[in-house]
Image (cartoon, rainbow, N blue to C red; front, side):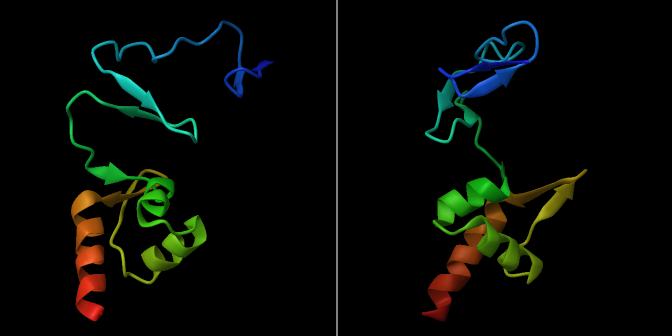
Length: 99
């Protein structure tokens, strides 16, 4: 395992390519947080907890509190928790109605 300080990542054996193999038909954007998002014209339908926290400008812990309180609906895919775009929009609309 090697550390490449230029991209801030660890690499096992052979150097990994960017963008990831098999996704040649998609363009990619690197965010400040080093996440990779496809820009292939497909609308993102599911968001991770970290993405929801960035979208709402809230901490990750606060997002988990809202999820477990049922204020933001979510789905589980295996061990992953995701928030549907439509559920995030409902949460924001409900905030607007409370004010």
